[in-house]
Length: 255
Image 1 (cartoon, one colour):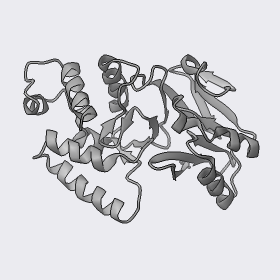
Image 2 (cartoon, rainbow, N blue to C red):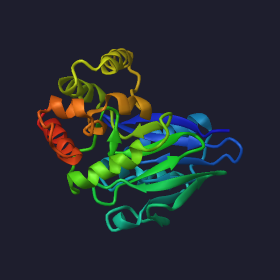
Image 3 (cartoon, one colour):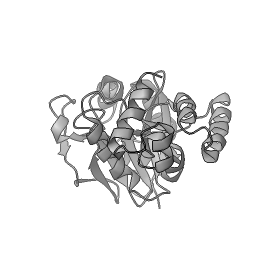
């Protein structure tokens, strides 16, 4: 049985995620932006938190951890490279390590760029990838600590996952990302259709996260910098893939 996924809105635009294996009763949380909504969801479902998986050290991804650990005896997992900036870890991981939720193993990916030491967790059997602020719905995180080369490499790792993987990212930035994407590719038919679905979801108060990787590959400009049409669109036909990505990310920074 695949892991059950629950998306929890937190703060003004963050998401946390619960994954639960019914057979073992184990429940993991990915990121801890705010304790209240997470504790309420655990209580509503009668679940006990067994582990917390942290993608990176930013406050809006870890601030709720203390209250959660007061209520649940969960092990905390995070990047070894980021351990000096994260809350105390029970398991410090590097790329290629695995973490388990019940009988399912997830693989750790180094997706540095937004921060150095940012990780993602891929659970292939359930088709889930928890990407934090690396790959996002129709975008990617701002490059605060890494380089464009670093972020482009990280996005390439995630782009290589199976197309039906659900990308569980950390924020509800999708409407603004979609509007920006339409400036880059105004004639992208799949993007036009996706924007309509996004507008409908937000009007009804529904999250736009998670999203399917195949949909990101077809519409997310941050993943499409290698395509000739996108290079033409930003007037960089002769440039390298990473140069085009850097330009698109720069434009998004100022959007």
